[in-house]
Amino acid sequence: MNRHAPLPLILRCLALLLALWAVSDAARAARPRQAESKRSAPRTLFDDFNYAGRGAMKQRGWIVRTAPGWPGVPGAAWREEGVSFHADPDARGNRILRMTSSTGGEGQSTTQTQICHRRKYLEGTYAARVRFTDAPVAGPDGDQVVQSFYTISPLKAPWDADYSELDFEYLPNGGWGIEGPTLYGTTWETFIPEPNWKKDNVFDTVRSSHGGWRTLVKQVAGGKVRYFVDGKLLAEHGGDYYPESLMSINFNLWFIRDGLLKAPVVRTYEEDIDWVFHEAKAVLSPAEVEARVSAMRRRGVRFRDTVPTPSPALTSPCDF
Image 1 (cartoon, rainbow, N blue to C red):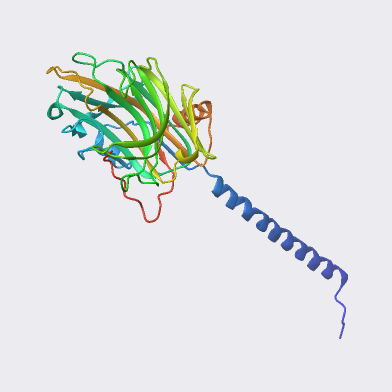
Image 2: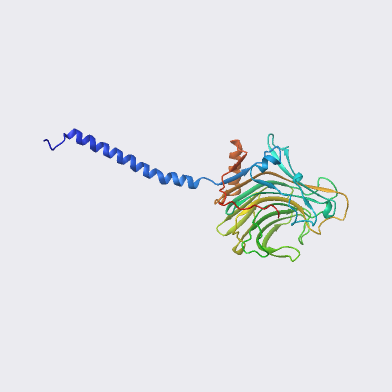
C-alpha cells in the first residue's frame, strides 16, 4: 500500500484549504463592519408636513391636542380645527402646517392649538423651520401670545425631579415680566403647577422682533443644551437642567393668562411650520441640519422616522 499521495494532489488540497481559510477570515472581518454599519445608521425623524389633512398626519404618530387644561387661559378650548395645511406661497410644490388660535378676551371665547409627536426623544439634535408672527391676522393687536417649538416629558407629580422640558418660545407682545417682542430659550428642571406656581428653570432671551421664517436648532449632548436661531447661539444650559427623561416633540400657540386685551373683538394669530427634524445621538451644526434636510427633499423624502420606540411604548399625553 502506497503511504504517500502524489505531490500535485497535496498541493491542490493545500491550496483549497488556504482558499477556504481566506474566505472564512474575510467573513469574520466583515461581520463587525456590518454590525458597526447598523449601529451607525442615523436614527432620524423628518417631516415636511406635506399633508392634505390632519388624518394623514395622525397616521405618522402626531397627536392634535383636544385635552383641556394648562397652559394658557382658563376655560380655553384646544381645537383640532386650529391645525390646517396650505400651499407654500414661496416654494412651488411645498406645503406648510399652520396653527391658528384666537381670543375674544375671555376663556370661553379663546381657542388654542398644539401638536405632539411620540415620546421617545432625548439626546441629539432637534430643529424646525417656523414662521413666527408679530401681529394678529384679524382683530386688534396686543394680546400676550406664545408661539413655540419644544420637547417635554410628563410631570408625574409637583416638583417631579425627573421632569424634562426644552423650549423655544416667541412672545411678539412680551410677557412674563418683559415688554416688547422677545424670544426665549428655556431649560427646565421642574415646577409646581398653578395655583401654587413655583418653577426651577434657566433661560436666555433676545429682545427684538423675530417675525418671519426662522430656523431653530437645539443640541442636547454631553450635559449641555444649546439653542440656535438662524445659526446664532441663543443660549447654553446644563447642570441640573440637563434633560433626564424621554420627551415628545411639540409645537403650540397659546395665550398667557392675564395677558389678554380687554376687548370683545375676536383676534386671530398664526404660527406656520415648514419642517421638523431630529437625529438621535448626533450633534449637528445648524448648517449640517440644513444640508440633511435639503438632501432629503432633493430625494423626494417627505417623512422619515427611524428613531426607535421604547419597549414597551410610553404613553404620549398631549395635554401641556
